[in-house]
Length: 485
Image (tube, rainbow, N blue to C red; front, side, top):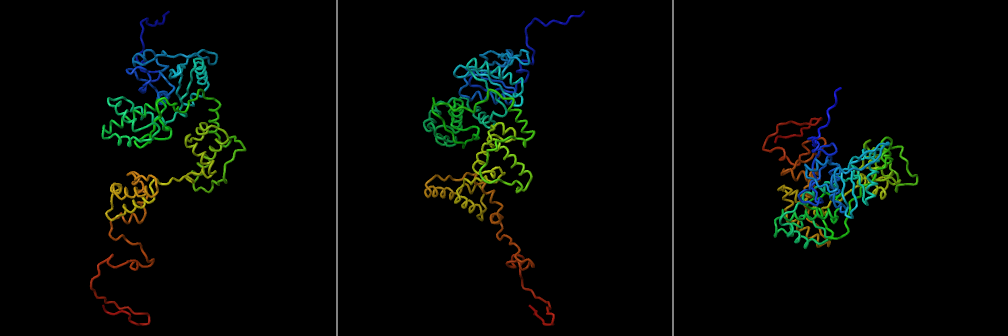
């Protein structure tokens, strides 16, 4: 009988295995400042959610160190990864009577020395039976070692915060003049004082180049964010050169990002699917009410607006009945931040707040007097461009006059504000006529019966010369009413 070939006694690793982690190809690397070795800073990831979780760990002040927990020794050696806790990091658990091993995405240590275990994945996957058993085993091990177990999903990892972290992370690299510029920045930028990047660049512009000062500001902000000292809600704003930034003093109590859960209840996941299947069967507390009168959705003009109103009202009522924002936002496909604002406005205004675009109104940031001046400048006969209006000295003079008159700062409108305002008034008849370039804009027809009677003056239509009129016009009774001209 032919015997199967025995495995080779020579050690080795299949070629493609060194390029994969837990059977999945490596998609990229996160530059980590928490490895403890400036020459070994790469943290690989295989999915975007793993990248989101890696940056969450990178910018959590309580995380001292983290590494991959599911990389093979060959992969760690090839990519020169820091694996102080060993890899792969195996966690034993039992599922359906059989022993298994669980390899978490990330393991590390907290600042107090406790063990950190972190897992990334879609909530629909992490809420199933086997995944819940894995999470329970990892949570139990973390508690035994005085640490925590975190689950990062597509629901609880903020996309806007992640993009802001990426923006800061790309600007944290050191450069030669950073120490000198940072010392000068901290003298003009005290703790708790909100300044934008453009303001700080103008302050230190004469001493260093604008690029160096800007790089130093972003690096200070990024380092402060990693330490929990950046006074900006990164889940709500989009970082730019005009975003007000403020730093807490060194040694202050850190600001922590929103905590990740340590378990996903299977019942909560089933409830989401039940709500998606039949939103009309939602059980509510009968004592929960909304202020103000009820709103009749039949008054809305389109069925789409009626459907959006009923969806918003159902979501708000569910939250007021005691359900969590996360569960309701997932069930009704409404972003959590949007749902929170909708709940607050409904508590203030009643059901009318659930009607799309019915109550929301935002006043223009441009002062009314400045709006009037912009309109006047834009409709001048020379037809100035938006840039010419922006650079007109009258705007600066009027803003200074308004500051003295009202006793508060009235900023000069920016180019983008003037451009947006001009777009809103460009279709107005008076503005369109003024911008047409015609010396005498055409008049509208004034007589419903005769075009000739609508002409304000004959010269607008034709040139009148000396002519004779040979036309005999009589009345019905024979009276001649014309004569030779």
